[in-house]
Length: 114
Length: 114
Image (cartoon, rainbow over all chains, first blue to last red; front, side, top):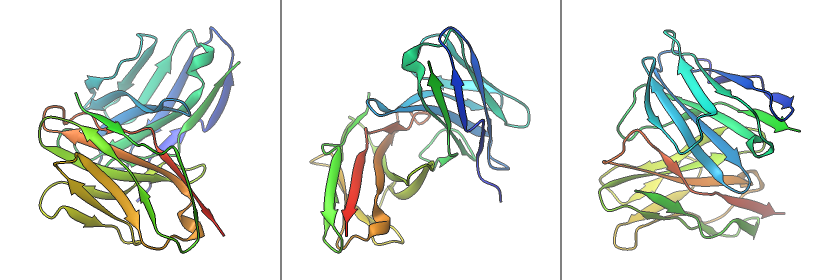
């Protein structure tokens, strides 16, 4: 069974631009969560989607948004990029949302903002 | 709201020596606790979890963690580490008031010295 796939793996953008990251969950998994990982802040929860609906959202500005498609694939978008948005963005999937559950992570998309 | 503290950001240890990585959580209700490991340039993967029952849980590669409710701790231990254990270790918590969120600690970088 294929794991969680994130694309692109690496990308470089400049301030003010926008970026879209993609995540394909494990087949059969309907929940997708996004995290931002930085050396200083660790893993910060961005949002979770289940059946195309956002179930929960972390404390990030509105520049960070996401969506989920009917095939459970998810995208996140960051508009008006700032230097502080440089981070590893991790996607995690699970079969269901809610309840104590294991998260299956992708290898991440490393974003560098210049 | 729940939170997770990992007191040690970096832990160097010699090969075959024992190690303990500390994790404390803050929550006023029943909790579910996890340890994840991140090897270089990879995503996170589940190492072990406590959901209920026995307070001592074990992983397949020799790690164990003990849930201590009175001390709100879930420390990770291994009696003899290998070079291959060098990685970042994250403690995470989910509780019955916010199943949708899995909150991660800042991580502990374990370096095994030959």
